[in-house]
Image (cartoon, rainbow, N blue to C red):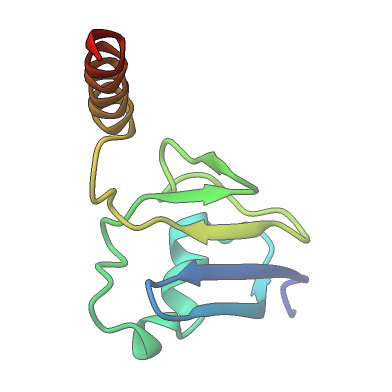
Length: 106
């Protein structure tokens, strides 16, 4: 007997291009298995699909190897951050404070 299939999307945004793939997977497929089986690894061989962080509709999935996908889920493959956003904000605020201090001395 055939397993019922569901449609999901897998998306990845590299620095230079974005890819969105629609795939049909059997009901009960995990988030990680859907990503590994969609063929995106051939387009982005630098991705470590066994370990990269994944999310569904902008929310990180804690254990993508165990969480099953649901029909119409959009699975997102996340890239590592190049800079910590908190550190960037702190540096920007410090730079602005220095500029204000210089302007007030003039």
